Image 1 (cartoon, rainbow, N blue to C red):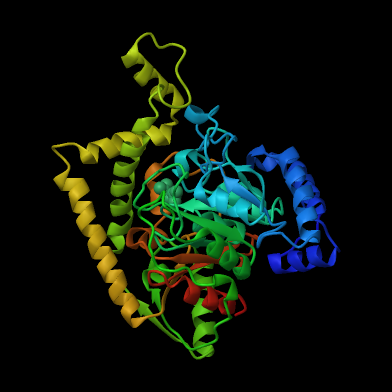
Image 2: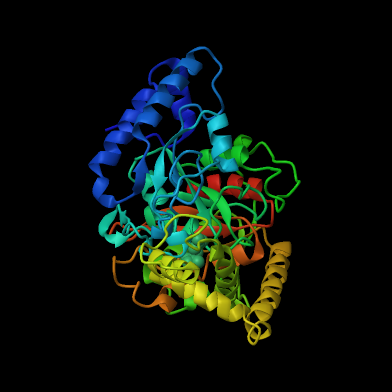
Length: 474
Ligand code: GLN
């Protein structure tokens, strides 16, 4: 098996000294992918292409013309377009669809000589928190194969966890990078809304969707953020703020004001080991001289309903384009235009996606728009304002990433509301558009990874990353 490098810095020095080659790295990851095929991580592995590009990059490393990510082997979530490659969003409706252009994130990775090794399984159209809504079946957690990977970027998280690539790219609408990262013991960063281009990323809920890296080190998360962030003429929602040199991040040992969510310790819905881990970090931070205070978020019970009303409304509009005419699957049983729409959508979408389209159109319908959609928009604003108020007094808000560790496969999918409630800690940053990171915080007694989340002010990624480096060493 290939050596497991925790950061690209180590890989880079090995590549420069000639101790390792990009081709050797790719071969190592391919072996690991084959040995763990039963985890169902990849929808497709770009084997020949990754090997060919590794050879090419090795040549460029030796003549000194290689980019900043030369030899970094990356897996992408299967909702990120890559020209000439299939992209399915793990849906039957896009099963045989090939991208005709590359997303900006893929272009930026390739321009810096990263090697894309394959596209990863995920929940269908990124809707889910367990990767059990994929048309291609669930992804299994490498720490315990009877348990879920988390979702929706489950394949991306396990690819990093199981050493099938060096880093992965996911998308996070309401927690889909952070929660699987927590379930798999890796780092997951959701940047501020408007930091990374969404061009060429299959839309779920456009006012929430953000691309984010899953890595084993803060230095890799920083480097990838720096490469991926910044303006793009194809995404007008991007901020014009200059992108800091994130790769120069420095471990921050300064004394901070940190708020933690009191309900995370008092709520019966939060697992005992998760509470114990949060408590132990609070104590370690206090012992190190930080001010750590409990806060109560007055809109806590509105977070999940507000997120789901808005996300479903946006999804119902975004997914209208899959009609059996423009893209992907067309029902062979259709006889006219109307049956083409109806049958292609009925046969092409999975159960959860259909549920969300129906609920989304319901909350947007004339009779209910004010009661649900408009109301949820107002509550979103209150949540944003309140979060900003808290962050005027505190540097970070600390919570568990998820209320419990990875749960067994097949138990939660039966009740969607139970799964939705699982997003309680991640959706605040998504509703507020703020950056948040999930950091590994050890394992429970069964060996299952646990994650803690830090939420920061908009565009405070640098502060967040600097502090994360310190936090991981607590
Ligand atoms: N679990 C959340 C949902 O199902 C978040 C998914 C995501 O971030 N893509 O919507």
